[in-house]
Length: 562
Image (tube, rainbow, N blue to C red; front, side, top):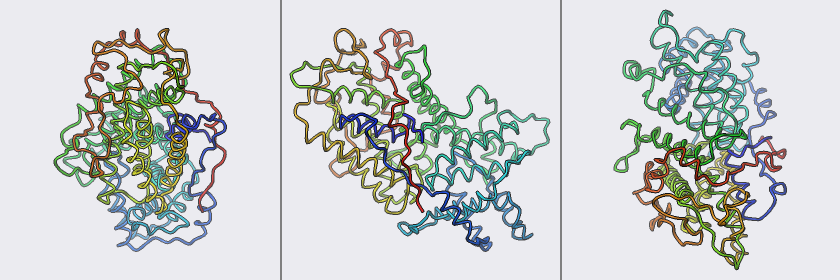
């Protein structure tokens, strides 16, 4: 199976390669666990009946209540009313309705499973998932909206089973069926559609868009539709107010759409093999400007507040933002680490330009804040037993903090935070969270490589002949000098660049001064963002080369969980 550089697991393998000095082709990829096809086939042999109406209502309400308002998968009130009609008319053999409600039953079971009480052989909700998938045998020539809803619900379920390739396929199918219905265009006002139905179409489309970008970025997959092909309005705030029984606050989905667009731009412009006329720093600047604008344009209702409790849905949005900052910048961080680990004694000190220093500091800050938010959720008991979101955020932040603990302008105090992340993943893995189990093993391997390097470390001095960026020749003065007005190059063996604040304080938690905006508010970063694209292009250092076809990216050693 192909693993793109944008995936966090690929970044983890890069770290191990760098820390151990081992060629990528000799590093085995840890096996990943998922609910296999054989397990699903076995579950199909079980005669699974519809639950009682009372139980069914509880499961569906639970599912609809826990699905983030960033994505809209069904009309809430209509779904409950339709469930009532199914039981009143005994319409239990309708394949489309059976698929939809079995998928909702499965999601409801996932969220109602008590902590650490899952059956070891499978994930809660798997039987309903297997039977729902079994119903979707044929692609309809004339798809209905309910059929598209089914595909989205099944794709949403795949995260709990760690079947992200299946999720990517299901989202792609929903996308193409939506194109056949013209959901990427505004429906003409002459069409006799109720405003609720019209808004339902709009939000279903943008949910497909969001899931395609967000989940694709975590696996390194390309986007399945380009922005130029989309001509539909954003979700309406008016319908959120007048039909609250059907729709969540549109501000969440509007913000998620904007963030999903930036995420897609990041995977394309930073991690693709396309040859760009723009320099790497020009593309980096453009992405960070988009992220800064996203933060500034958030309505007050979905901003994080340090002085009061935040809604979980708001928190998830900001977790994704900090993940996007990390995704955009971590290639720079990795290549500075490569230069640092290649250091040899008795060589003069290399330098890091203010631009690269500001980028790395923003990446480290985003990782610290991302992990802080995850720790806060974990300690309040708000983390779901299953699912990929929190394990992925914990893992991605921990990888950056590993790098921070090594680089002189990072902080060794970030290392305890890595151990905290490992323990959270370990606890989630004991509850049969398949994603957490996989990522815990990856992080363990990174930690072991780090310990091995520390035990063999003799003299942490940078080699002036090593490459600061991506194994390409340096500039003539053996350092990458980007002349910002505010400063000159910064020595890599300088103890601290700007007095970084690690995630953990004396009481083991992050200091309260960390905020989402701070990652991009540093004066050096602001100076970088405000420079013209032409100036950035003139002073660009050598490009970062993403080795997308190196041997370790192709993984054949996978296992299923039964």
